[in-house]
Image 1 (tube, each protein chain N blue to C red):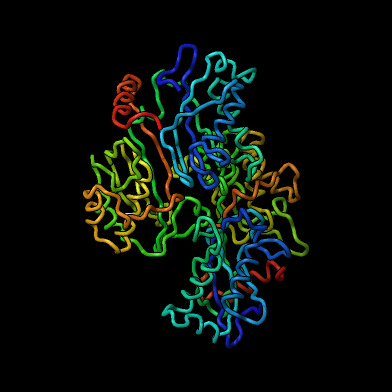
Image 2 (image 1 turned 180 degrees about the horizontal axis):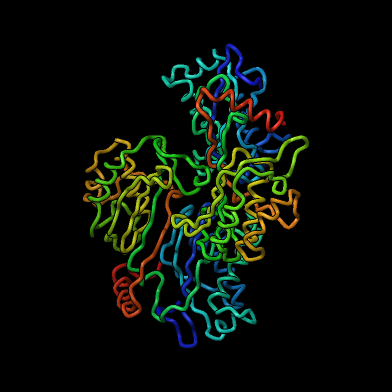
Length: 297
Length: 297
């Protein structure tokens, strides 16, 4: 995928939602069912391109992690794009969405529903990049502790926790982690990539609309691998009284992996939303992010 | 099961939640996985009774229908009840809840979660009857139409509908059905049983907290078989403009099954709550309900 769309191509943005339960994560892996694999296969069928379609994504979610609004992009020849509606009377974007969802929901149960949905397709500016143009990612993490309702209908995306958790202590711990820091202690680092991130927001709230389930809102410019689940794991230790509220900050300051930090289970985590700058600021944002976080993996 | 608990027995109330997706409904059936079958089996294991435990339930939900707070009862020998805590220090009710949930969540995915949960166990008055003492049942039905968000994480309990639905028209139609009527047109009748019911509340609302999903609240003293799903089916025909708002009332007044009424799919339906009178009024309520609705099936 070239940094900007070539002449004669449209850069297409896809907004996607998925239940991560039955996927081995976002990233394509041979022999495994992944979100990238399933969506790229549907795109190849609908677009009838000679080569394989390749998606670039905002957040490469791990196995079991869900998304309410993930963002990806791909380049489509302008002629193919224009021909998408056929005689349907739809716009190319609506025709693509409709046909992808038709393919993705084949043979699913309940009938017509599927565990991955294309929420929208749209033509993006040439220099839009789902990954490097993103200015922030927002995740939620849900925990039903001993004080919350256990709703079997929500069990695929809520961690059930035996203990009663002290959300005020968890909130104090979470707030102390916000700001620009080297999050090495909470990351599985990659060779040559920085672990400096700006944690813009991290707060816990007991949600009355969700039967008292504890919901963490976590927003940062970007996250390194396993970062949200490690931050959540540190807060859970505080919430159940195993550690004091200052401990997660002490771990952060030490700037090395601490085996006492448990990575929280994947299924409680959902990528909620990805933020992008205005069209005029896209190129600048892409250059800054590439410079800071290194080349594509 | 005797109408009131015998001397030497405790009448135990169980509050249950379940995801109906992988159950062939509430009622025990040979060779099929049913909620009643799974819970009775767990009760038999925990209580170590010679015979098989039998549950009486407030709402015999169909295959695929969910429950957020279903109610059932059973009789347990007082000595067995008192012995439940063992050395755990728990109350008998907490010990039963804890052990049942332990059994029900064995081998489930995500680990520790399960598709049926005992929310509470409690000692009920001798003349409590989960079925005949209930003064009302409240159900919800959820539809994501073309205007609503399609959230794959909620797909097991929300009907995805292609059309955009007119919720105001659906509301007018629903309100006109409220009151005491013979609901024969909306029931699969059983021999010798009345189809007169009081529909206390039936309203549609687009829920902003659920991404614009249409939620019907449906409350009645009791429902006959397939009644909620038939009422919902009639409203869907109005909402998509196939029928005018007066049609569901015309069907009701005709007092015979109308093949134009589609029974809406099971998976959008959830039993939310069952209401009971105060302890002093239980016996009176049971007598009235038995008299009106006939013997146990």
